[in-house]
Amino acid sequence: MSLTKQTLDILGGQEIEVPSWAYGNSGTRFKVFSTPGTPRTVHEKISDAAQVHKHTGLAPIVALHYPWDKVDDIAALRRYAEDLGLRLGTVNSNTFQDDIYKFGSLTHSDPAVRQQAVNHHLECIDVMDATGSRDLKIWLADGSNYPGQANLRARQDWLHESLTEIYERLGDDQRLVLEYKFFEPAFYHTDVPDWGTSYVQVQALGPKAMVCLDTGHHAPGTNIEFIVAQLLRLGKLGSFDFNSRFYADDDLIVGAADPFQLFRIMYEVVVGGAMDQDAQVAFMLDQCHNIEDKILGQIRSVLNVQEMSARALLVDRDALQEAQRAGEVLRANDIFMNAFYTDVRSDLAVWRESRGFAADPITAYLDSGYKERIETERVGGQQAGWGA
Image 1 (cartoon, rainbow, N blue to C red):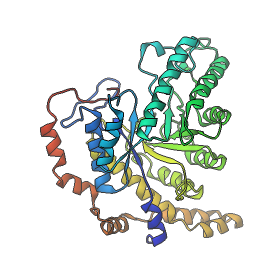
Image 2: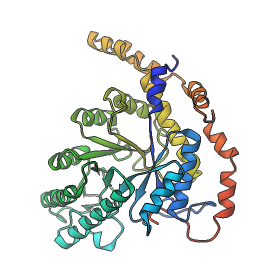
Image 3: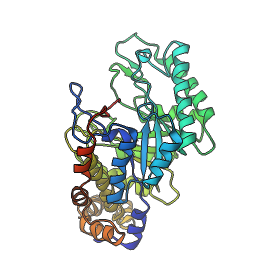
């Protein structure tokens, strides 16, 4: 099978949002590793992100993390990004690093702490007003470690109250996307541990509240593509955080651990209409490149998403539905697997060249001299890191 013009037209509209924090230093719980050329400012992070888009044509949007990416003049930062051909995208809040949030933020038992967390999100919306961003993404570290430590039911009520105040501040074209995570850093219970809890909370808020699905935030063996299908069916899938995991929230390059899973997810994305021109689902990466080159890690990631999207678009859906209706189990599986096993890399390389990009974005980046230049120029100052 080869990629048709219709398939390539759909891929031509694909946009993958890259996270600013992916370009900073990161590591394990025991050590954050420093590397030459690491950005010292959010401007340098955006400059690195521009390299990903320059060589792939896939990544015109950069997500910010607030206050990690706080600047005095946010309008100037927006102009800086636009001059590099980028847009500023999702604003990610942070209520997991201040001492006051030790026992929770939006779900804390103390109303004053909850209000401080709400106020932080209102400030994030002010940033969105200045950047033109559509989405406010909320991930909470809130939870407890021991039975009896917290009032589980009350915390859900407090969460609803907090989210309601944030939701009411959103502009007409802005959205709140609520992320969930199975565990960590709370180990007995997490306040938003699964898609169902996130769905219940955002459904109660209204149409501008959606679920964010992080592909690394599930229990082992979870059928993530089913969750994708269900949220699309319900009209509540707002965004993805793409990464890959072996054991927990590993934040590795998407498709690295299980490329077949990424294919299965992208098939449900295609079937659910999330790659249609007017679709509102945001496709974002959420990764930390601990031992690999950060820019190369992001290039590889967006290419992985593109390749599996292309394979998902190759599934003969008419033939598949016919086999499904007839109960022809193995024929249906063969149709599905034939698309997965199709190597689309050569077709995509030719297509990239036809659009003015290099056939091999990774080689093009390595040959550009950018890596050597930033390693020479970015000497002194404080390197950005996860949480810095």
